[in-house]
Amino acid sequence: MENDLALATEAALAAGKLLRAHFGKSLVVDEALHHDIKLALDKESQDLITDILLTARPGDALYGEEGIAGNQDSARQWIVDPIDGTVNFFYGIPHFCVSIALRVNGEITLGVIHDPMVGETWTVEKGGAPMLDGVPIQVSPRTKLEESILFVGCGKDTEALNTGIARFHKASLRARKMRMMGSAALGMAYIASGRLDAYVESTISLWDIAAGQLLVEAAGGKVTLTQKPGKADSWAIVASNGKIPIEEIL
Figure: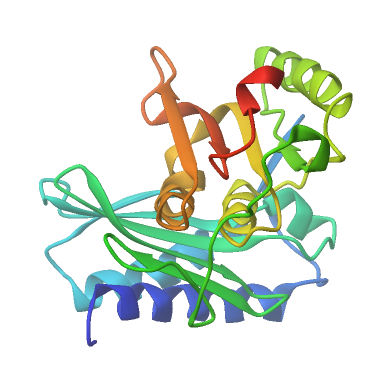
């Protein structure tokens, strides 16, 4: 492979092809919780990504929603969400994606988010321009909440749900439109592209947002992460175009 970004893009596109081939078909459910679903396809997608990445970079580590692989002592760690938006996928809603980031010595250095149903791919490298299908992107110029479209996530536990619902109610009185979209990674890609203006959620996992954080920041936006006490790589997130007064609805 020419470079790490090309490798990550290859892996994301391969996983996206797998997901698209299975979309709308009978699926094996590994675990069904009140607010979440785990599919056998989640693991199959991550295994495919792992094979592509670690075959090309055998000394690297991989940390994903479906487990870890590779050399966990490596300074290079791939962070993978093989299906961000699994519930959407299971119910036949074509809004989900594959998210891959690379963290080197604790710093995110690249990200890829691929939407296999729409056929869009966002890519970014540290210090480089964020791209959507090879075309540079930037966050929206909107400065007023009244002009904005906001994405509020509600999480999966009682505390996160209560926080999310309260924020949704408060923000809905100010914003032009509110959205609960079901994919954090796509939400952040949409902010980077100027389609949405902010995304907030009180509890989210690193693999959901690692690629998106770099993408939003490179596109001129702002991302604030606050680690959740006692939860490894679990965060509260506030991501925006950096222009609207998002703190007013938190």
